[in-house]
Amino acid sequence: MIYFILILAVLIGASIVLFVKPSERFIQFLLAFSGAYLLSITVLHLLPEVFTESNEHTKIGVFILIGILIQSVLEYFSKGCRTRSFTYSRTVKIHSLGFIN
Image (cartoon, rainbow, N blue to C red; front, side, top):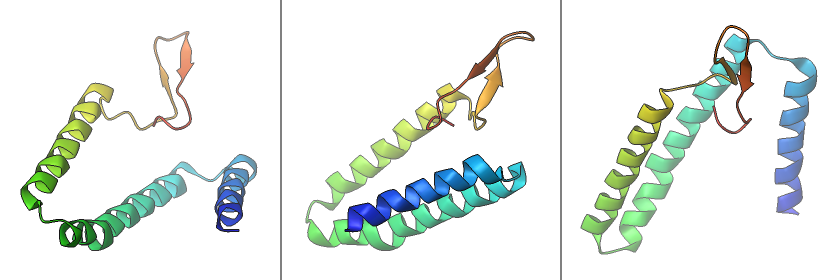
């Protein structure tokens, strides 16, 4: 039952974007909200649980720092591209995949 609710939520969200066409400013607001929500879930719920369940605090800290470093390297190579499409030249327009922003 829970999987049905999750899939339904994704379908409703995708249909809203496809049919309503929200403004760019509203999309930026939603992205900022979702990023803040994920950060708060990570800091307030996931990390404390990981540190209380394990005695290897140094190893966990190293893995977290490696993850942050990998994310920074990926952001550097993607040049922080946040648009759905980018222009390669004046005549050719290349569209990126939906999950790569």
